[in-house]
Length: 258
Image 1 (cartoon, rainbow, N blue to C red):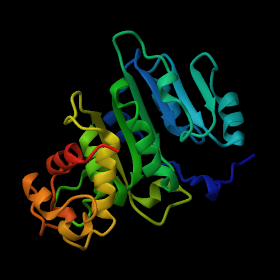
Image 2 (cartoon, helix red, strand yellow):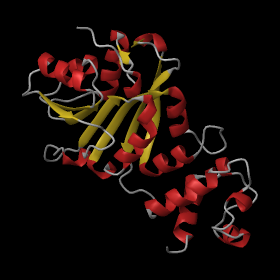
Image 3 (tube, helix red, strand yellow):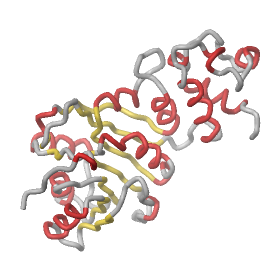
C-alpha cells in the first residue's frame, strides 16, 4: 500500500537519487560510525547509509512508517526508535568507544528550529550533524551580523556550532514537492564555546530580537541601561542584527543573577 504523506508530520519524501547520493557523499559515513537518522520516512536515505554502516539508529514518529521500515530492513542493522524526535533522548544512544554520535536527517519544516535547540543540549556528545532544512532556515543559521537573516537562531547556534550551507535542493527532488527550496547544512560542535551561561545568553538574545527594528538602547531597556551597554563594549544605537555573537556573550555574562 502506498504511503500518503501526512501534512501534520510535515512529510515531504526525498526521491531524487542524484540528490540522495550527493547528501551521502557530504556525510561520508564510515562502517563503525554511531549514526542516527531523524525522520527516515520511506527509507530512501536509510538504505544508502546502510550500504556503508554496520548499524544505523533511526527516530520515526509515524507508526505506519515504523511498520514499513521494520518490513524493509534487517532489525540487526536498523535500530528503530518509534517516537517524537523532540522528546527523544539522543544521548541515550551509546557511541562506539572513541567515537561520537553523528546525526543526519531530512527534518520536518514545522519542527526544525525547536529540534535544533533540542539537539544543542547534547552537542558535546556529537561529532557532526547533516540536515536537510528549508533553505530560509539554513540561511538564518549561517547568517553573519548585518544581514537581514541574522537573528536569534544565528546567534544561539553559532555559539555552539561551526556551520556551512553545503548545497541547495529544489522542490522537484521531493514527493510531494514542497513550496520552498531546501538546503543541506553541516553542523560541527565547537569543542570550547565562548564561556557563558546558555540560559542567560538565550534570555539576552530573545529580548534583543523581540524588537529587532529598534536600537539596543530601547529593546534592551529593563535589562541593561545605556551605560551598562557602553561598559560592555556594545553600541547602544546599534540594531540587534548588527551585533556579533561575542557582544551578546559579553552581555549574557554581565546579566544580573536571577
